[in-house]
Image 1: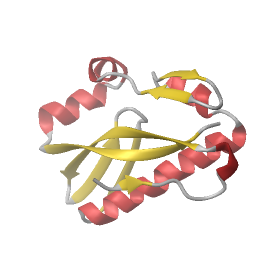
Image 2 (image 1 turned 180 degrees about the vertical axis):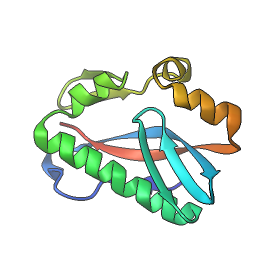
Image 3 (image 1 turned 45 degrees about the horizontal axis):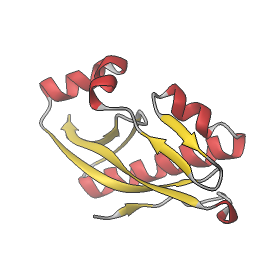
Length: 128
């Protein structure tokens, strides 16, 4: 299993939290999409490799932006995550799939109408 790393201006001295993120890969109109229901983020490309790279860039931008603005915890909560713990030992719990179906109607469309692959990737979040 590969890791989706976060690059950019995240302060290293604050540490990082590693977690597994469930992703969906599907094709529509000759474009490959990689979608994270838990983060409501998408990457796309002509093939799986370019779609994954696109998703990595999207994820990096999301984390860098929310970290720099000091809103990562708030945004994760808005997306249905449970955020707790301490600054030294933060805990992030992504929403369960049944909760995501209620919050993101197009997720049901992916499951009903698309051929897709579900896979987990390890993701690094800053310990803000």
